[in-house]
Length: 477
Image (cartoon, rainbow, N blue to C red):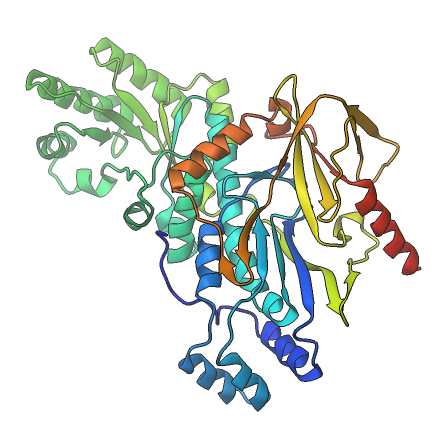
């Protein structure tokens, strides 16, 4: 693993510990529970790119209360002495199932399923939500930006605007899973073996007597990696002309300049003008790199205006997921065992989106065999085999909406990560997760990936799961 090894056991909400204390005192702490981690439909995301599993695995492996933790909790004077003693030897002993990093997931379907003694499953709620929700959010934002960029390259540039060091580090990693080709974050590059990218800032140019002298100095130091920021004073009247002068000097010495960077102004207009100037000077291969509060919406507009941008450096709006700062991840009880008998549980609500699906579940992705494209996801109880042939898929709410597939392939999305407290899954190299995600996203029709008004992908419930849900609804009346 490349992630850091800090013990995050105490990174939890106080009420998790107070509930644990209560479960311990009333004797229910050993009852086996099943929790689902998923995100709700929010009107902004049709799909998400799962990320964060590697750090979640490290968190569970390292789950323990150190002597300093025990001393602190004891000093709060809200926990029983017997519970404090119990925590001294605490460790995770349950099972965890999860989709892999890079998997395409949809609202309402479990990204992760925890089956463990109630007291253990309760503790890990907050941290799992923190890790999985944040990294999935950033991976998804990156995916949308990369889709908008088409065949152009996207690089993550957000560290200075991230909400803290961890958000910058793990956000950079998540952005790579989402399709970015590099990061400006050196520590993330070191930790996760990500390509690091960067040039120079406006201060470099301003620290020299003139823009030309600043460019010449940079070219002397980095003759084979010369990408010049040209908008410090006047992009078209001085920046690009001075860059061209330096590029000609480099070429005369046998070096090939990389290109220019635009960081302000009308990026469509400036890139088109700069492209003409570079081409006329004989630098048709010089790239134009653009930054400045870029996101998928701006990129879409720039492409409509035929902007001549080759690489996008995306910072604030990616690393903070500017237009949607939270994934809306939740962790809900789906089953509890008492006296050796399992009881499915669900949250009831007047709002359909807030009702949960009961039971110990898994998820299948159904592919149309003729096209090879994903057709629907099917959430089913883990003890059933819903994959009949032909397969009839029925809308999760409007059961009169159905379709039947005679020729299909199905893939279970969940992998077993922990079995009885032991990690049985080896996290793949980051590059493998990147390729997996790109391949899977490519199996969805473009209509599902539109930035606005996408076609809604079908996530259906098996008949047995739907019947269980109706049964619980009826019992609650």
